[in-house]
Length: 319
Image (cartoon, rainbow, N blue to C red; front, side):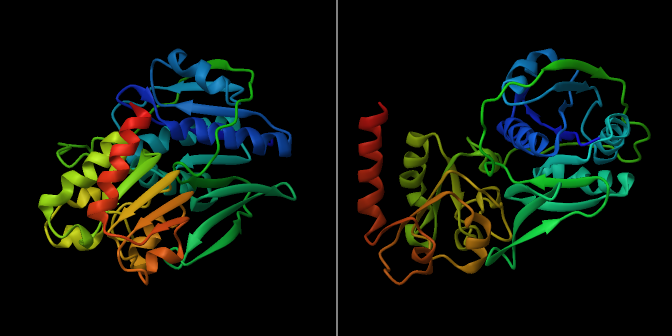
């Protein structure tokens, strides 16, 4: 079979955008190789999400009740569905959870895997995945030569294109099986108002904000835009903000539609974490800062003048 299997995600009982992105990408792949799209949601209430996924190409929406998240349990359940549906291609989210179970699924399926794809196409019946390499300094294209091709895909990297699938709903009997590790506790105190990995817009601050007392200037712009608050490693290392906000090679890797860098010089480690953003706006008084080499729009000026002015204008436009 030339079907495509997608594993989506929920957060606080709501469908994450990556679920639609992967289903839409799967629809395009399936149309190229002549197959169907099966989207799996780990829930016992799959009917709630079937309509949204049907609208972006799902022929089958499968609910699997695997209980509390564990890498082993999810891998066991997803592999059971792979054995049943026998897809040619499997798309998984390159999320915190997806990164934990994806390699386990590939091992069970005896399949090759490409992680952190930002673009997917089809050539000769095989999927070609484009992904950043060398800390984001270059991109490379990869094919998987095994019978089952598995890819994890970065959030916000795929367009969501409306196209109805059949939308049949199934409830899978797949189980978590034997799980040898158990989550004892969770600390969510470092969470952002808007999560970095899911955000369409990110406003980040760097050493140019001069001190932790000036974060409200950056936060105000982020709140006005409904954006996530990001930060450079320099500000995290200085103790100005928690690591949960760090964007870069040793922080979060993001691909928002718009990334606004305020007072960030653009060290290669930071660029590795946000270089695939669709639009990059750089605000820095140093016209030679490396960030301007990757910026879509650059403002060479004092951020303490530009950012409040931007916030004020956006408030007028957005109400």
